[in-house]
Structure formats: structure tokens, C-alpha cells
Amino acid sequence: MLGLAQGQLQADHSVASHLNHCSGCGACEAMCPSRVPFMQLMDNSKSHLPGKNTVTRVLLELVRQPARYRLLNALLSSQRFGNFWRFFGFLSQHSKSLQTVINSRQNTQQLQPFYPATSALQGNVGLFTGCITQLFDQTTLTDSIQLLTHCGYNVHVPKQQGCCGALHQHNGEQAIGTHLLRHNQQVFDSLPLDAIIFTATGCGAQLTSTPQNTPVMDIMQFINQFALLSQLKLQPLTANVLIHEPCSQRNQLKLPAITPLMQQIPGITLQQLAENPFCCGAGGINLLTQTDSANKLRLPKILDIQTQQPDMVISTNYGCALHLASGTVELSENKNIEFCHPVSLLVRSASLQ
Image 1 (spheres, one colour):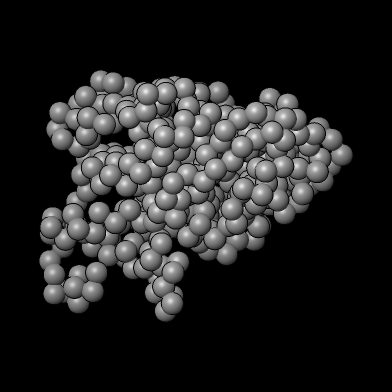
Image 2 (spheres, helix red, strand yellow):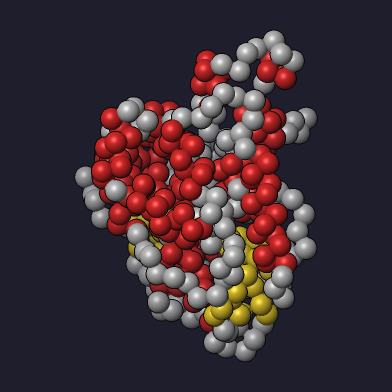
């Protein structure tokens, strides 16, 4: 990065390949005693790199506008498109299992712009839906809405919102990333909200990267801070659950572990996923563009899942859950392990579904 900044290195394919092998987990920045802003330095450096490969260019262009999400859905889930990309060497054969998982999670249901509280009103919150989450993880969004409305919160889901800009920010298009971030700020600032809630910690790291007029909080953080579990009648749930902690939750957002919250579900057995302090390799679109290194980074976790054979794995980042689920399809004999957000487990225990 210093070589690029000082003109001692040319921004050629070799340099680009080297920098792009960083998954952007932020662990080095989180533990650096000098507080070197590594993530920002990396983002700045990537803005000087040569043209991106086809996969990156297509994805970054499609997530910019919600009107393009239907095409994005087709590109990620269609076997025909997957075979086309693999033929030209942009995606590995491992991505077939990724498409299998994506196809099983598709949901084209349109969320309503407003969901009223179903108990004594406590406040108003906005729900950030993102781009990939909106397409493939609507279960988490609808479960969050059910829990929040049950606990007395009006939930606003403005249709004008869009991609948080994280994918652009970390792939050399900082101006676009900033534009998307500010657009979402303006959309939510126009509403009378007590908080803006996100369900994917990767998006949350981008949304909280600049000061906001309204507090921006992770759904589990909100549940914990306002003691929402005290309003739920949690029933026993007999399940062996592995907890995955995303890098964005631990290193960027510095949120506490969700284990104490989940331990309030009667009958549940909780274990930490192997090597939780280390990156699973998903890293935004790293799982698509750097598949070999991404798959090597997740292997210890997949082997742990294979050994422990849990009923489910929970994660607060959809991209990580998607990456781990596709690896489980490839390597695990048990094809029925469920991957979900922890809020869905709380909703299930409270019989709100």
C-alpha cells in the first residue's frame, strides 16, 4: 500500500492480486496497539487498482439500484449464469453449492413500508433491509419485524432505501459507497425514528462508519439494550446450536457476544464454532472473487460442523452464513443442518412465527 501511495509500485495485476487476497476481516486493526486504520488504508489503495473482473463489476453495478435486484437475483441463482461465469474462470466449481443454498432461500415477497406495534407503543424504529439480505434472507427481516412489533415498536421499512455501499467501499469505489451511505441516511432521517436497526453486521459496519442523527443498532444489540426478552415468553427449545461470530460483529462493530442472550432460551445447548476469532473467508464478495482462499479459510469451521453435527448454526451476518452453509453442503454428510440468524431462534422460542 505504501509502494502504491509513493509511486514505487505500479498498480498492475500482481499488486491487485496481492491486495485482493485480504478478506477485510479487520482483525489486525482491532488488535493494533497504534490504532493504524488499516481498513481505510486498504480501501484507499484499492481505488488505485486496475479494472475489476467481470463478477465484481456486474455485482457492484447491480446492487446500486433496487430496480436491478430482480436481475441480480437471476444472476446469483440461475444455473445457466453460473455455468457461464465458471466457463470463463470467474467462479470456481464450488459455487454450485452456493447456488443451491441461494435457491433454497429465495423469497420475492415485498415487505410493507409500515408495520404497527401489536402491544403498548414503546417507540418507532426503522428496519434496514440491504440488497442481498432483502433478496435471500427475508426470513430474518420478517422475524425481526414480528419481534419488534410484538414488543411495542412501530417498524418503518422505507422502500427508498438501498444498498449500504459496503461492497463499493471495499472494492475501490469509495465515492459510490459514500453516496449510497448518504442516500440511506437521508431516507431514514425523513422518518420520526428512535433507532435504525440492521440485521446483517456487514451492512451495520458501513452504516455506523459515519455519525448519524438517529442511533443505528444491530437487532441483537437493540434487544439486549432495551431488555426485549423480558416481554417474550420463551418456551423450551431442544436444539444443539453452534454460534458463529462474524468479523464485522467482533472487529468493526465491537459488539458483545450474543451467547448470554441465547442462553435465556430454555433447553438449548450452545457451543462456539471452531476458530471463531478467525475469518470464515466470506468477506463481502470475497467468497465469489477469491473462492480458493475463501474456501480454505472456512475449512476448519466446516470440519467442526461436520464433527459436532449440530441442529443449527446461527450467525449475525448473512454473507457468512451463506458461505458456511454452502461449504456444509459440499463436505458434510448431514445436509439438514439449519443456518439462521439468532433473532429467528428467539422468535421461534417465543412462538411468534
